[in-house]
Image (cartoon, rainbow, N blue to C red):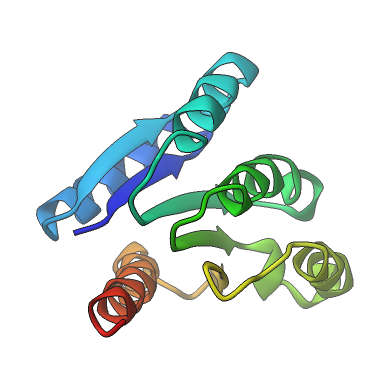
Amino acid sequence: MVKIFVAQTHDKDRKLVCSFLENSGYKVEPNTTDPESLVWLARKISLISKPFVIVTSQTDESGCGYVSNMLHTVALSRPVSTLTIVYTRAAANQGNLPGVVHFIANLVRTPLHELRIIPKFAEDTREQEHEKLLSSITDFSASLNNS
């Protein structure tokens, strides 16, 4: 199974996502998004030699680029398959859609480095959000097994 790095600002959300993924059988490493933790995580990612997943969450457009963009850029430097998942309320909010589309367009995808944006809709339950996340990770893991 692939290792998953979760980088989220809010403790409650980070703990819930990590617990859900661990209960689904994945090895998860939780990380906060303060500058020191992000530098440490970026260094760690830059040394990984096996496929991995990065999960970030953004609650509004204003923070949409910083954490996800930095970690995805570090993942691009690795010669292994990676998946960066950004699940965001901004992508689900039509008022913010142009900014989010611009943000997504600026993140590079390669055959080795996948990027998935998962919109979080107001009517989605936490369980639905987690299932979308798990589905993306399961698909990525299956693609590794098929190659």
